[in-house]
Image (cartoon, rainbow, N blue to C red):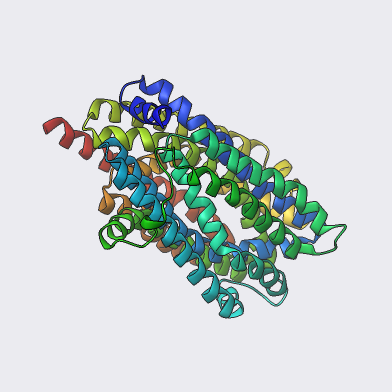
Length: 449
């Protein structure tokens, strides 16, 4: 417990650059591994099942995002609150938050999973499924929703590990999940002839194995943060604080769901099922870069949260500056790859020449504004980390809901399929400008305080 406490206190004393490297590197490795799993999963499905199954994954994305929205609200809200309590050295309250976070993950995981299964086909049809893609999407999501409570707990406890100054353990949990998925995927898809359903089963099994290890990590009473039965009963004030902080990532995921529904339907109307599949491919590639940014932000979160709780604003500014620089650099690398090698990227997922051609054009357009996304995403995460809920919600909504949807409706009416694609980078750039303005105002307010 003493070592763990010293690691937590180091958030306020060690050089910020070294801390960010120490905390972000495991997160970056873990998130990169996770994103590569999503790519490999899509590659196995694309080559082992077919183009329509690949398109079905794109249809499934909004429904998975709804589950992710509730999981993020609890996981991120709880982890952020724990970081703030640790910064204030209120260790008993931090443990109370951990117990409530686990309880809320169980409640929301069961609720979302059950409702999703009951109304699965109508939801998938509303999200843009066709007669060709619905059977694949139904098979996949039925298994994912059945294991939804496991997913919520797994993601929530990983966020708690990072807040407990255990980024290495969080990294190990993610990497083990990815490795198990990659091993099990081809076994279930080919030798066992289970198709896309096999890929979903592999995902749930991997998360169950790692969840057991996470629960063991938090069951040890000698740890600074550990699970206690008395803290599992939801406390009104803690639940309120978790939800108030977690509403920002919840809003981000829900708007992502809404945007994906509109995008899938717009692509289906203007380009058919293959265009939906192309969007799925472009999303998987962009997801790799975005997950690296999430890893960087995860490294920033405990440092910024602890020092903001301790009112050391100079250290807060330093870690945010470094995180923004790293995020912009990562997205710039993704932009270069996407613009120069879109056909090669598309061939990773499919052999269908028509799907490759549509995907290559979509990748190139989708990644036009990638470098500026790094700034906008990191600044949004920063305001969420320090509990500036309204600002974070606005920034989460602005990129997708306030800018993208109107642009998509306008551009698609003018330029059809290309209009759908071009609305994506256009909204990213406008959201970047808004983030610059908000961050500038925040800096001026802090300087005047």
